Structure formats: C-alpha cells, structure tokens
View 1 (spheres, rainbow, N blue to C red):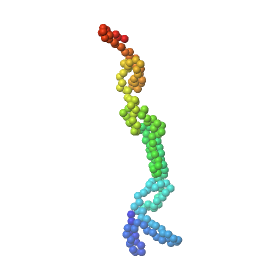
View 2: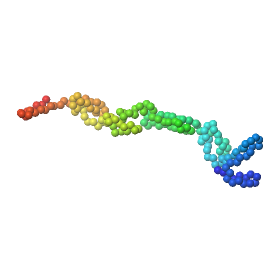
View 3: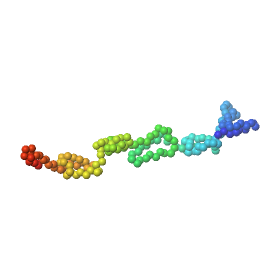
View 4: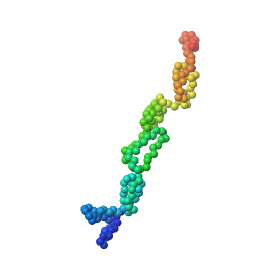
Length: 168
C-alpha cells in the first residue's frame, strides 16, 4: 500500500517506500508503508520479528521442521501440530500394519489399499454342510473351520447279463 508523501512542500503520490541518507556514515534508512500489513505474531516464527502496521512484532509460531507420524489402526488418525512445517515430513501406516497387508489376509473379491484378496480366502459363513454330508476322507471349510467328512458312500453295480444289482 503506497501513501502520498510531502517533503519540502512537494507532494509525492503513491510512494511505497522512502530512502533517507544517514546523518553519519554512508547508506540510507529505508522506510516502508506497513499500514496494510495483515500478519500477526502467530503468523511469524518464534525468534523472528517483523514490522507491521503498529510497529515491531515478535513471532509466536512454532517451527516444527519435518513432522512424521504413523497410523496403526484402521480408524487411526494423525493430528498435525500447529505451526510451520518444512514439507519434509510424512505420515504412514506403521510397518507392523503394512506387513499384514498381504493377499492371503484379504478375502477374495476385496481390494484393500491396492492389494487384491486371494482367491482361496473366501467367506464360508453361509455354508450349510456338516461332517455327515461330506464324503468320508474329504474335507471342507464351514464357518472358517476345516471339517472332515464322515458320510459313507454306497456303490451299486449291475450285472449286464442277469441284470442283478449289487449294493456294497
């Protein structure tokens, strides 16, 4: 924001800064119009200062640098601390949980974080079989439990000449 400035009865319009020679030594003092500044102490890092519309302000914002965290539960969240971050941090699923994200732990037809379920991992909760309905020596999974069948089979044969049936 620039101001109109009057020096030696001359008006200078829209002046954003004024440089005045120092009384002693070389160089100049530079003055800027800060009346339009909108920052506050919370917008400036701790240990830094700035000149705003009402003068010098010392910062109160924390400098967190690189902030990192991990998430270890499905409903887990990472709360980002208030303050400045340098952009080098990261938040990741914990290594322990990443190790569990394998196809064999995911049911068929489901994809979790880009990992497809294994075809042999199926939901067996609707199975209606029982050991007595599964042929003896064969196995099946019912409600996630391996069951060995106990059903005995009957063998029927027919003599081609006499047409007699034999049941074993």
